[in-house]
Length: 95
Image 1 (spheres, rainbow, N blue to C red):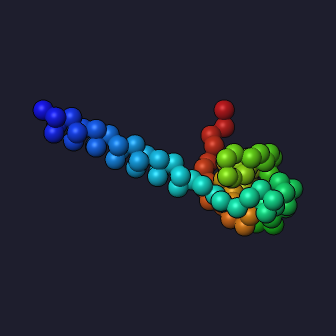
Image 2: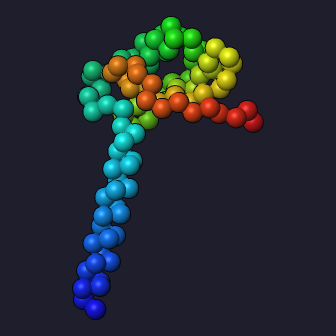
C-alpha cells in the first residue's frame, strides 16, 4: 500500500514538472528589461514586415501585440522584446 502511494505521488510530481515545462516554452526572452527594445521600436519593425499595429503591451517575458496583417486579418502576436522575432501568432475572430 505504501509503494502505491509513493508511485502516485511520484506520478503527480512528474505531471506537475512537465506542465511547468510546457508553460515555460512560451518564454520569449530571459534578457533583462534593460536590453529590451521599446514598444515603439517593436511596432516599427512589425510595420516594416507589413503589420498594422494597434496595441502593444508587456506580458511576462514577451510583448503582446494586437495587429492586422497585410490581408486585414486581426492577429495577436507574441514578440521577443530583444530580437523582435514573432514567437507566436494567433488569428482573432471578429466579435
